[in-house]
Amino acid sequence: MNLATKQIAIFYGSTTCYTEMASEKIQSELEAMTREQGIQATISMFDIKQHTLEKSTQYDLVLYGISTWDFGELQEDWESTWDDIKTLNLASKTVAIFGLGDQLGYADWFQDALGMLHDELIVLDCDIIGYWPNQGYEFTASKALTEDGDFFVGLSLDDENQYDLTDARVKQWCSQIIEEWTEA
Image (cartoon, rainbow, N blue to C red):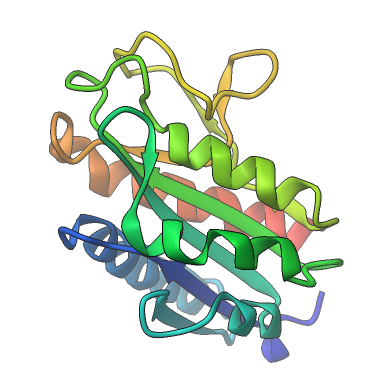
């Protein structure tokens, strides 16, 4: 894979800025990792409130960030653009997703929006990478678990209850997705 010409983009929706802050951490980590590995890459960030999801089809590696609200609901910016997902041409694209949620306050719906986003993307013939182990969390149910229940379908962050783990999780996940992407 010739990474010198590859472009990475992060698309996120954020009401309270937590998903935006997570996106910034991911962008910073990806920039540091690609630089350390001698990979020339441009990592751009886009708030979906201001940019259409269609723009994401221009990138080789696309990261989508979403948060779960209340009882398993979509974040408002994602909700208003939800139908646009079905129209995306992501064939032959590599996609990774990450989500924010509250595992204690909403234990029955932890990361549900992440799972709903995965379900919409998986049928678009893209290569989804970055599945994340579900160890270290306390929740009752989640739509974001893989069929075997061992992994989340993307990075799962809980800045409400485990903020102190976010930086390490972001670093580990970014390393994982760069490795999975460059091996493809």
